[in-house]
Length: 567
Image (tube, rainbow, N blue to C red; front, side, top):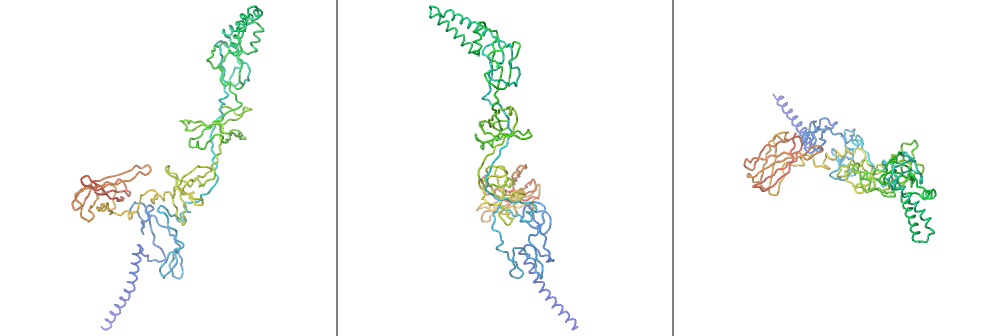
């Protein structure tokens, strides 16, 4: 019996010692779990797996699943610190130094400087995976090259039209096809005109009268005969009868039936209306169009956004791309047309070129190239700039894996570089590759749009005004897609319930991409003691911007902003 009681006493002592040892260990484990929010794994050599939401990165879980805020699938977080083994010591992250036993202190020298709120953090490993590339903002001379298509055209100042100044019938045609070159003084055609024949007869009669009355005693009659000769002679000259033809007419002493019309210019015949076999013509008819091709124009099309860079006198190069050995001609812009083509939204520019061997032919297509010096400017690669239409921005490398989206003011674009007028300093590094991925990450974090914030940043209870308290909850919580019961409690600043008000709950979502804006609203019923409830329809799973409005007698007492997350 004595040995039995002795055994019981020894067993009780062993239990007490074990309870004291393991109780202290459990207390330490509970304390660590309370401070860190995580439970310690039994296997000290392995770290517990941590899963996070890509949209709400402040939410973490030790189990895979879906985010309770936005229903996105949780992603396992990669290890960012290396461990060291040996001597039975636990591994410690880089940048931390050991102080007291069992504790690790952060390395103050390695801690990055505070970043802006809209900065995003990408680890070096993730940067390599997505292909992030950087380039510095540098000062460089910019030369913009404008290339456009052009067309060779006639020199409009050297276009001539041939008309007759009398009516009649064409007898013979010497220039009888379009495309023929003529020289000044070459015969074009002959014409028979009754008016011309009668004027020749008058001229011959005036000559005979002048000759017979030259030695007469009546000076007045002699002067009249001379005046008649001059008048008829002048009429023939006005009808484009040459001095040679008039001299021949006086020498032969008889009127000619037809008259030869000569070219007054040299050039290429581009239009013809003079035909054989007695075609009737009058002064209104355009019988020939003759163009001098010794000089030609090159007309180019310039888009309206490029017009501010174009000036008269700028050097330009014309190339004929269809030749085996591309030939180029250098000229200058002689005129910028002051109007646009409404169909192509382009304006014409004009250049003039000598064409002694007629190598440049009208309506020939050519390439025009203009080089415009923009001066020395601060530049970044073209791929670094993201353009939303209303703003342009770049991602600036802030070091330690942080990137800051920054709005910039752009200048000209040349040689693959944008000129930066405002927003950057020389030497700052910007992202030139994978910046669209950074842009998506930045928007998800709310750098440009306040969407998808964690629930803890939007508490469920806020003061509408200094004199009103509003509380909101949903049943179920979190809400579901479809009808949900919403309950609101309204009280004054002292906590006294307000039961005779009109309460309205409205949820909304702004337009995103091609998705139109959405909203839903519910008017709540009062149940006394400041309690209100109603049915609210949630159209889709999302974190909705929610507004609770309290009115009395048409007067607004107050309102409060919340967020309702539906899954």
